[in-house]
Length: 339
Image: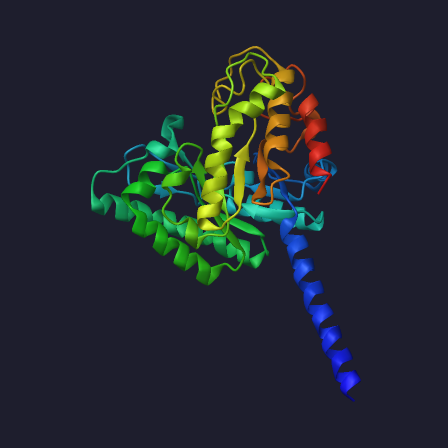
């Protein structure tokens, strides 16, 4: 009888550790994702197959809201000129199609400020103006959080690059996170800009430290791998220290480089000028993968950006962000297929 009890206890112990290690294995899998560009006509199953072929684990869908600079109103419903792929209807369609393809999903709402102004500089003058804007924003975010819960979306991002607003109104963001936890049971993050992630006050309340990772690391026209790796070191240390401080993994909510000369000098630069340089893009991606992808504290990232019509996207004469149909796509596939 004693032997039987011991055997039973041993089986229970083995089962417990099997579950623990299984959980750790799942959590250790990288988030190998892409930010999917919304289209005027929405998404199709054919649009998502190349993402699966890339080896990606996650497809991120981006619903947009719209604000005029200095005005306290946000629009996101029934905007007549909005593309379907950026609307509630389109995001729902994209998420459902991705799940049919066995892709995990992320929803990352973003606000477009008039004239393309940087979201991080958005300001209002009075408390009442902020309260009006925050009421609209809360409705916007909770609408998509409910959709995320309904569709079993893996990760939800509650905001993108609102540097000044976060500093001016931290309580709003704390209250929003608390409310989100009541309607959405998945993982939460916030997408901070690369130069302000240490200033976000609520990482302790979220599951990932989200960063749009346009760190300047090298001025060379065609940056060499060794130089790029050295250029990452200071940023790497700051990222690691932040992860350690909060005991949270880092997630690059956006990362990528244009296929253009000096692409690692100011990676956020999105103008259409510049000489095409696919080698510069390739080397910059390679340095990022080598520096981060095998680190346990690094959760993974979402490429900026991926167009649904893969056959017509990018190409070796294109100097934009997408790696599609460029040498960098093969490199990404190599790293993403490692799991």
